[in-house]
Structure formats: structure tokens, C-alpha cells
Amino acid sequence: MNEIAQELNRDILQGNPYVYELLSELGKNLYYPKGILTQSAEAKQKAHRFNATIGIATEKDHPMFLPLIQKTLADYNPKDLYPYAPPAGKPELRELWRKKILIDNPSLQDKSFSNPIVTNALTHGLSIVADLFINADDPLVLPDKLWGNYNFIFGVRRGAKTVQFPFYTKEGTFNTIGMKEAILSKKDHGKAVLVLNFPNNPTGYTPTEQDATEIIKALREVAEEGMNLVVVTDDAYFGLFYENSIKESLFARIANIHPRVLAIKVDGATKEDYVWGFRVGFITYASEHPAVLNALEKKTIGIIRGTISSASHPSQTFLIKALQSPDFQIQKQEKFKVLSQRASKVKQILEQEKYHDAWDYYPFNSGYFMCLKLKGVKAEVLRNHLLDQYGVGVISLGENDVRIAFSCVEEQELEHLFDLIYQGYKDLSVKLK
Image (cartoon, rainbow, N blue to C red):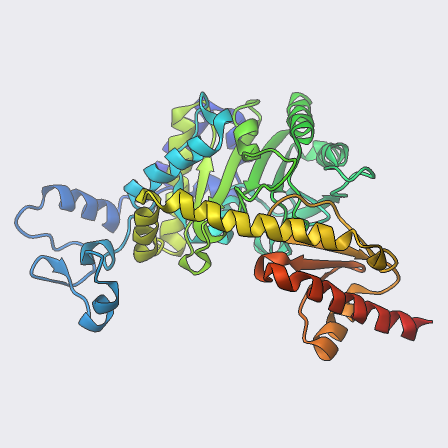
């Protein structure tokens, strides 16, 4: 094992040995090498005559660029677009995002957590978690209403064994008891990775204050029984809280609740700031021990260096400019209002009695999506029928669930959408009789 990796592991062991036990074999071997990028960083500070270190081309002390490209980006200095960004991300962006996290999550005010590290959006952040903490056959605990890509990120890539629990209770709240039982079913393994995605994709549900209190209590009880936990909050749709839910990330509540619980926040500008194609995400760790945070950061940067090298520089620059603008929150609030009104309209539509013979709908209060639970018609059959007969696209999930993204349908068109879905349902119901 590399000497730098050994040093980072010693730092983690001294700060919190439970975090060391959570690391995968790959995670234990990871480190940030003192190679070209380190030497280039030193040269940037000290090489006042010639800096012949990093692999970019320059002209007249500026990055070389094609005028036809720069013409479309005239508001930006070439140095903020064309060179490589640091593997951890632009320091200014990391600091801005940390300040944003603190403003958005009051429960974090007195807690210790790392500077966010820039990732190539959220999928990349989740894959970093998988690399750092998943060995083959390690348990991955997920609700049964989930984003399908988790199976690929953690299962196919790293060999995790998924343990599922029902997302909802009979009362339509988050199933904390089921979550706790699923985790403890793997107690003999000694560790587990739990992924909590709120607002949830596909259901659009975020825990209430009571849900959140019960979740924290359950996680603390699991830790007190001697089990080590990585708890990942996938906050892709953060901030889109419309009704009776908590208004901050569960990361803020979970951070530092017990030495055996390592909280990790994976979030990004992609969905919450409506810049999907920019591919800017972040990964943030919580620990009471600065040495542990430093070691996890170095290992994370090592993964980034060994995979994508660094995230897009222009995208980071664009986001910095947006976050610094006085119009940023004003414009975000305008978009929030649009989505909130669409969610409210969907609930009004679904309360109509004419739909009650066709489906129930799962409770939702946030995010981009909601789900229907079909009665007597298979979801995949309906999906194909709607495409072929009505030109309507929805997502089928399992036997009976259909996901509707109200985020991409104008409010005045929502009732027509559900009427077409209902017509498709009736077509199939007649054929079944």
C-alpha cells in the first residue's frame, strides 16, 4: 500500500476507527498522489519566470483558445474557462456552496463538516461513495421506491447486495421501522450503506418533521447496537419542498449523531438550479474530527484524479457567477412557484372521483415527480399503450406503479395529460373484461 494512503488511514484510525472500518479495500488504498498536479500547483505559486508544468497551451500569458468559441462566451475571462479546474473543484465555488449549505440547513450551524468537493454531477458523487465504502457483498439498504441507477452504481459496479424495505407505511408516511429492520437484518455483517433520497425519485415524498425525528432516533439506535453505517443523503431535488415536510436536508440532522454513523451529502446544481447539462455536483462529509475530514477529502480527490481528473471548468465558472448574483434567489423562487403550483394542480386533478376506479396515488409533497398505483392494469402495458395510441410518455415502475414528471408539463396541460392516461387505462380495462 502506498505510503500516503497508509498515512491517511492512520489519520482516520486515530480520529474515528469506525470510519476506517467502513472503508472498502479500494477506499483504504486510495490517496491523492503527489504527482504532476501537485508539482503544477507549486509552480503556480513559485515559478515567476517560466511555468512549463501543466499540459495546456498558452499565448501572451493567457490560455490558448479559438476565437469562434470565445465569441459566444465573451462575458468570461479565458482563464476562467479553458484551463483545467483543480481536481477538488474551484475553491471559490466550494466556499460558495458551503455557505449555501449552511444557509439552507440551520441544523448544521454548530456541526463539523467538510468543504464540498466538486463532482461531475450527482451520479459521479454516488459512484465515489460506492468506491470508497462498498466491497463485494456489502449490504446496500434502499426503500422499494428508488432511482434505478442505484442498482448499477452500487450493485453492478461494486457488488453490493441490496436490502429493500417498503417506502411507505399503511398511513402513507415514511417507513422508519422497515428501514431500521432492514439495516439490522445485516447486523452480523457489521456495516451497511443506507441511501436516503429526498425529495424522493420517483414518489416526490419528503419526510415530515415527525418522520425525520423517528429516522434520526432509529439510526442512533442501530449505531448503539454496534453497527457501522454510511448514510448517504441524495439531495438531487433539494429545496423543492412544497407542503408538510422538513425544509432542510436530513444530512443536517444526521451529521455527527454517533461515531459509528458517517453522514455524506451528495447534491448539486443540476436539478435544484435547473442546469442539468452543466453536470456540477458536490460531495460533503460530516465528522467531528478534522483529520478524518482531511483524509476523506484526499481519498476523494484521488478517485477524481484517477477517473475524470477534474470536473468542467466552464460549468463551475457559470455557477459561481449565478451564485454571486443578487437575482439568483429571486429567479429560483420564481421557478419554485411554478413547480409548486403544478404539484398543487396535480393533487386537485387526482381528487376527482372519475379517476378513483383506475388508480390510487402515493403521497407526495415535493420534487419533480409523483406516482400512480394502478388498479388491475400492468404499468408496462399501459406505458406502451399510451405511447402507441396517444403519444404520451410515462415511466413504468414494477408491476403497477407509473411515475409522472409534472415538472415538464405546463400547469394548464396537466388535466389533459391525466385524462389521456385515464383513457388509456379504460382501453386496457375493457380488453381485460
